[in-house]
Length: 182
Image (cartoon, rainbow, N blue to C red):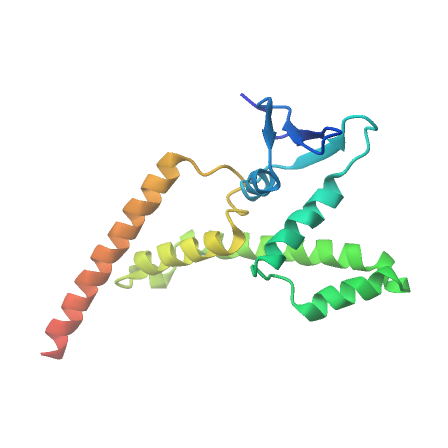
């Protein structure tokens, strides 16, 4: 079993092919993006020179997603990033971005944690369905980033069961509402 605490080592061969050292097979940029979404850290190194190419490949993954219309970074932000490379701001930008993403992750974790704590709203009909929808929304928005691990088939089955449960609860609530309106 692979040690998921250590970065996944990917070696780039002279042919520019990427080799996963854990599974002993070749991978694509999309495979690497999936590893990262699943919470794995990756390190990509050039086999011959030993140079760390991780940053270069991560930027390439982002560029490919952006070019397919999966825009996350507004044009103004991209423009400011380009400007920061040619200004005094270059020394501040990386720390600012890191702090911003840390705060985002922390805020999402706290929101998820607070949803699970006992509160007066928890006794309201349909609260559990709403909480499950919010969890699914946060998971979708973060691409599983908060889970910190790989989603398994049993997680998928659980999500399908949760969705079914949400639908049943919604149907029951709609039935109650229709009876009240009569």
